[in-house]
Image (cartoon, rainbow, N blue to C red; front, top):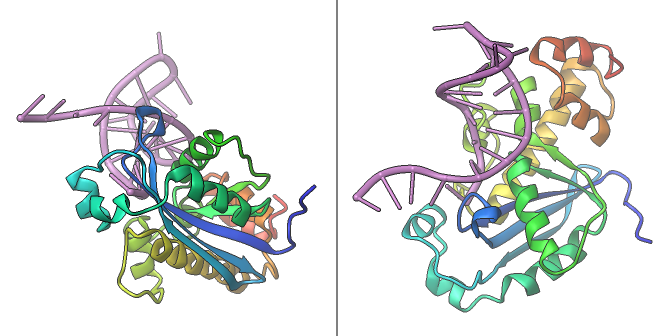
Length: 208
DNA sequence: TGCCAGGCCCTCTTTAGGGCCTT
C-alpha cells in the first residue's frame, strides 16, 4: 500500500491533441512539479506520441510539432512513468476537470490508477481573486505578477506557473485571513463555496 | 467547409441559456 506524503502535492498540466478524450483526443505532453512544504522538490516532463498526426492548430498553439512527436515515446510508456511519479499524492491543475479527464483516460488505457484527489486552481482563483479581469492561467500570472519565463502552453512551463499561483493563493490566504497553514482539504472546500459565502468561510478559518 | 466536450457558474434561472476555462 502506498501512503500519501504529508504536505506533498503534484501540480500537473497536459498538452493534448484536442479538448475531449471521448472524441479520440490524446495527450501529447505531460509536465508536473512536486511541491513538498511549498518547495519544488521534483519535476516531470515528457512528450508522447499519440499515434496520429496533430492538427496545425495544435502545432501552432503549443509549439509541439509532428516532427517532435514522431521521435517521442508512445503515450502508454510515458503515462506508466508518470503514474509512478504521482503515486498517491494529491493533484492540482488549472481547470482541473480538463486535466483529470485526460489523466483518467490515459491511465485507464494502461490499467493504472491513482489515489490522490484533484483541486482546481482556476475555481479557487475565481473565489479569491474576484476582481481579476479573467481567470485564465496567463491572466492570473499577470494579475498577481507571478514570475515566469514567458513560455506558455508547454506542459512543464504551465505546471510551474500553476504551482507558483497555488503557493501565492496559500500565501494570500495566510496574509488576508490569518489561516496559518491552508490544507489541501480546505482549498478543495473553498473551490466549492459560492462567491457570496467565500469571505465568511475564510474569516471563520474555513469552519463555515 | 465548419464544427466537435464538459464542468462550473451566473442570471433577464431552475420546464434554460450562455460565458468562462482547458487543448
